[in-house]
Length: 164
Image (cartoon, rainbow, N blue to C red; front, side, top):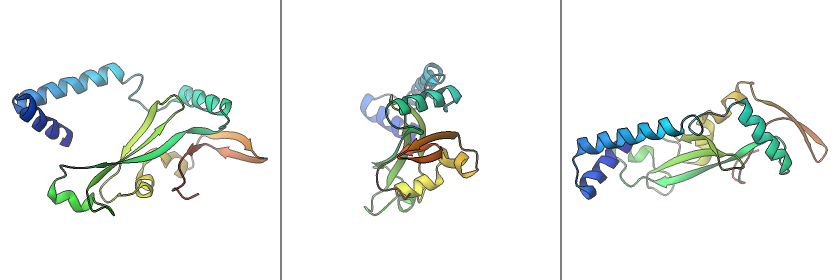
């Protein structure tokens, strides 16, 4: 709803069309994007995708890797005053945190916006559904060896801020 409101304000102010027209146009645009791209891009990974990602990772020297994970922080310029404290972090400005996982070919197969009070990457990661199967003991069984050590679980490439 917030995206609709921001877009409607933008359309009304800059394009000079009414809010109801802007809302109707935005809804039609979003429906068209979903209709066109949902089967290929706006979906969760399936077994075929996982096999392709793992095969490419192995060929590139990263056996068992399902993608790269990271969080991006966006400054929320028009955050409602009542929500500002819930979305502010150490920089004292409200931000929205987006966690994504992308495969080698830049297919973003997971996206998660952090919830209120999740103002850093680790808090978002703890609340993210990306590891729910792992946490519930239903992780994909992947067998590979690195430097003589045998591993049996998938992993994600991440930068150095995450705990082991």
